[in-house]
Length: 107
Image: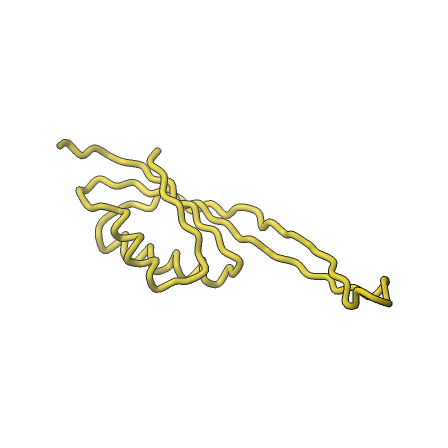
């Protein structure tokens, strides 16, 4: 089987941007160790969802709590010239980080 240059798109999504930052730093170290090229890192806009909740369902209609959920996203473009399986690298690294949604796509 011939291995050519494979381009991968790695989509990372989380509610905590610090976890994404740590994950990308660790991934860069491992990719550098395996001589896999990280082409670019794309920062996507943060999606903000806002909610209003009633504090008391019986009496005070004006009393509400305002909550928001922020979803942070990153794209990583990876170029692999080797026979190394990137999926195994990402699975092993993902065991240490909880709260991440990771998708790998071959371009």
